[in-house]
Every structure is written in structure tokens, then in C-alpha cells.
Amino acid sequence: MKLHMIGCSHHNAKVEVRERLAFTPEQARQAMLLLREHYPDTESVILSTCNRTEFYTAAIDPTKFPSHHDMVDFLAQFHQLKSEEIFDNVLERTGEDVVRHLFTVAASLDSMVVGEAQILSQVKQAYEMATDADCAGTLTHSVFQAAIHVAKRVHNETNIHQKRVSIPSVAVGEFASSIFDRFDDKKVLIIGAGEMGEETLNYLRDMGVRDFSVVNRNLERGQKLADAFNADAFPWTELTRQLIRADVVVSTTGATEPIITYEQFQEVETKRYQKALFILDLAIPRDFDPKIGDCVGVYLFSIDDLQKACEKNRKARELEWPKAERIVEKETAKFMADLHHRATGPTIKRLKQAADELKQDELKRLLNKMEGLDPKLRKEIERSFDRLVNKLLHPPLESLRDDIESGAQGGLLDALKRLFRLYD
Image (cartoon, helix red, strand yellow):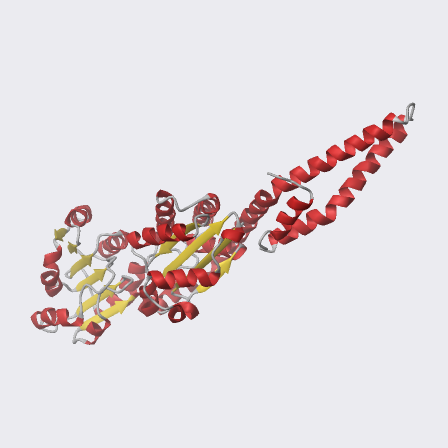
């Protein structure tokens, strides 16, 4: 059995790198199906958010599994990049480290905003997409279902999620509040109708905003979000006009390239007359050309600009970290123990059964020749045979457990099956 993950996040890669490696939902599905064509026995799940892109793979038979370099090449080729362009920004985790990392991510302990609720939903969506595409399997089912369980434990048993926070709440609270003294008189434009947009609307409404507008490529979906907040929904063709009237813009689309270039913004800028405009670009890839931030009166912030503010949020939750980490460690150990049992259990059981059958045959043959044997001596002979078998089996079984727990490729397990002819 083998578990593997390659990817990048806000911890090790700048937004310029992450946006080149990000997947839209459709791209993630295509990539998983393409990987299955190349490696039919490999399971896969792709988690792609504004802060991370992680490609999880697994296989029961490690001999039919792509190498780390194979996966980096696959990721680069899918995004039409050269492997050497991304290699240094792609982290690798294997075995138990994959399990621990996924549990930490799902529990929002690895998020830019520690305790934010959206990541668990994103993990579930990634797993469900892989399942629907028939790209998940025995191992990925197990580890992702366990990750969801761990996240719920951390949420219920710690205060990490107390005073529910999110990236929009930190962004608006830290940055927009330094530009505007009040929000009840501000016009807010939400571009995109996903969960992040809904989260932002919730927070801004609590801040006193009453004038909302939603622009989305799918007008029906945008209207549904707008109706929930007594806001106005507009078709995509109205984007420029809504940008002209807005004071605050929050953009969260899944576009693969900027929706507003610097040249396009010139038309907006001339009609705003240098009125202050706060733009929170939470999309990966970014929705707004970074050069727009140089325009007079424009305050453009991308996801990476939130790092310092989010660090304050992390420190405020430090007291709950040990408790959350203990849950992750305990659940990781439990999962790995179960995984090791599943990997070695059937083989160990067959080996013990075979040894027991041989022992019983030899005991029967010996005792049949010793009629009238004292019952106590008979029992002692039986115990001696049991101890002999156990002592003979102990070293290979211990070596087998150590081999599997160290994350080895299962070579010893296969050797044991061949040596003792333990066929499935």
C-alpha cells in the first residue's frame, strides 16, 4: 500500500506560483481521469483552493504507482509548464505524513486563517468529485473519510473555531476597516457566487452594509445568492458598470485568467474620479491585474497580502493548538495502525493457520505413538510445540510489521507470501 501527495500552499509558494498550478473543478476532473489512463491502479483526489493545490494519490500495489518525479512531470505537463519551473515549489509527502497532513488541513490547522470553516467543505467537495469520477478507491475513501471525522472532532472538542472566522472576515476587518470608517453607506460588489462570496456577504452584512450587488457568469446562480441577502444580481455584461459605482469589491471567481486587465480598468478609473475603491481579490488565479493596485485611490489586496493579519489570528488560537494537535496525532496513529493491520493481517493469519496445521499434524503423529502418556506430560508437550511455533514466527512477523510501519514498499510482505506459499 502507498499514499503520496505533491502540492503547494501559502506556506511555501507565492500566489504567482499557486495560480499557475491551480485547478478549476473541471480541470481537476480531467486531470484525475487522465492520471487513471496512465496509471489504472492509482487512486487520486485533487484539492485546489485559493491557498493550496494538493494532488493526493494512493495504490494498493506500490509497484504500479507513479514516482514523485512522474507526478511532478504530470502536474507540469497538465498546466503546460516545464517540470523544472515548479519542482522547487512542489512539496512531497508520503505514507503517515500524508495522513497527518490531510487531517491537519481538514481540521483547518494548516489554513491561512486558522479555524475557518470553508476548508472542510472544500475537502469534502474534492473527495466527492473524485468519487463521482470513479478516481477514488479503497485507500482514498479511508483516509478522506477519516479526515472528515478528525475535523469534526477538532471542531467539537476544541475552541479553535470559536468566534467563527474566515478569510473575508480577516481581510475586511484588518484592511477595509483601515480605509473606511463606516460600512453602512458603502456599495459592495461581489463577483462570483461561490461559498467565499456568501461568506463575505454574511460578514459585511454584520458590519452594517445594506447595498449589495452580485455579478456572476451564471445569472441564475448569482440571483440565488442575491435573493438570500436581499441584494441585486446582474449579468456579466454589467460588470464594468457595477465596478464604477462600487466602494468595496470582493472577487472570488474560478476564472483561469484575469477578468479585469489593467487596460480594461482604465475605462472604470476615468469614470470613478479617484473615489476610493477597496478590492479584495480572493481568486486563484487572480481576477484583477496586480498593476491595478497602482491606480490612484485603488487599494487592491490579494490572498497573500493577508498573511500578517492571519498570523495574529493564529496566535490568538495558540492555547487550543496542543489539544487539536493531540487529536490529530491520536487519529493518525489509529489510522496507520488500522492500515498496517489491513496490509499484513490476512497474510499473518494465513501464516499462523498454516503453522498451526503443521503443528497439529506433528503432535497427532507423535502422541499416537505414546499411548498411556501422563495427561500432565501431554499438556507440557503441546505447550512446547506452541512455544516453538511462536518463537519461530516471532522474528519474521516483527520484521514484517517494522517493514510496513516504516513505509516500505511491501517487498518483505511479498517475499513472505512467496516463501511460505501464502497465496490469496
